[in-house]
Amino acid sequence: MDGTDNFETRYLTNDACYLLKKPNVYGSIFRFEGQASVFWPDRGPCYRCLYPEPPPPGLVPSCAEGGVLGILPGVVGGIQATEALKILLGIGEPLVGRLLLYDALAMSFDELKLRRDPKCPLCGENPTIRELQDYVAFCGIGRGEDAEAVEEISAGELKRRMDDGIALEVIDVRDPHEWEICRIPGTRLVPLGSLGERLHEFDSSKTYVMHCKSGIRSAKAIAQLRRAGFKRLLNLRGGVLAWSREVDPSVPTY
Picture 1: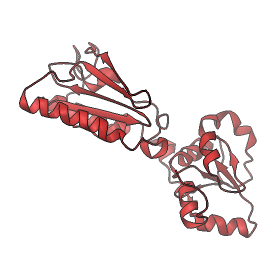
Picture 2 (picture 1 turned 30 degrees about the vertical axis):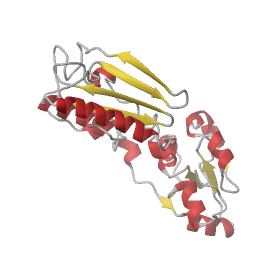
Picture 3 (picture 1 turned 60 degrees about the vertical axis):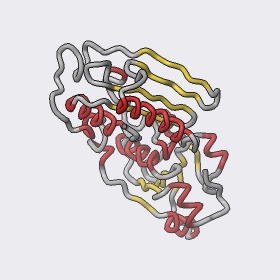
């Protein structure tokens, strides 16, 4: 049963299950939506048939960044448990070749038919994957410039430097709706998705402290700025959540 929240583990689980000829009961959730299926070797398609390649690193936010409706894991997990029991008991019709889609806001279920991809490198007509791989590298995570050590600053230290008048600018890379919920005083909003087209607003002679909700997106922003030639960059450890916890409890959390 795959209940993970990162792509490298999903591909590893899929490939291991296929090579061991074991059914993979898959479930995924994000914000208000979920999906589930069963990838059963020799009976239907695998996860790679549905998603041949992972999305670029940073494109899809994690659960910690994007948020999940609290009850959603229970709904999708219950579906996965049902599928696992059906397989163990040999009853019913498992979700083989079917992708079940759940929309909590509309309270609706939809179903998509899945077919095996003849070009799939794992279960296709001419497979090239015959053993487990380096899935971190396959998903483009932990390699290259994005993997360089990011210099961090604590919320308390940032507050001290701001109070002392040390020259720095705090940049918030969250989305505008998050900015409306809470913000660190004196910060400037530059959403991560628009950072590339707003590089002209940055000055290489200045020191920038990048922050988001928890520190993940801001680290990605720093990697992007590094590629553009900026060097004086700090990441706020723990993001605005740390600021609320360590500096100003009046700042709302979400």
